[in-house]
Image (cartoon, rainbow, N blue to C red; front, side):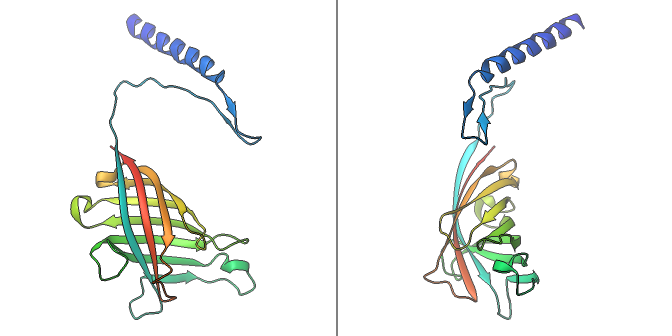
Length: 194
């Protein structure tokens, strides 16, 4: 018991000293934030993989078999359709054409969340059904200003191979082949995972 107490107390002194040292390395990033460096001891070193994934997804609406439906509408006097909410179950394909190889489904919901521009708040699960990722998912959450290109959204988790994943997704509208009934989006995703 004494040895364990000594070890815990030494660990506490080490962490306290480390915290004092690290607070001296604080940098200021404008008025709204400060950043401090801190190193936490680790009992076990883990190696993570960095995976890049590229695919297209297809929003199909106004068809006999839509993959995106509006579930909440807002009054016409609300700017930018603010509050309109949609559910989706879109095909994910290797190429930009819907006829190219299907690798999974992008399932989730999004709502128009801005009074000042056209932007969505998205919560989407990318469910993979091909190759080594079959049965695994990635979860994406964030703001998507749909009129811009190179839109960045967070990858906040996953399942299967992507358990504990974190990273980002870059979305680009494929305007050259998109129509109001069939909207195509290209995704480049970078994730770190065990």
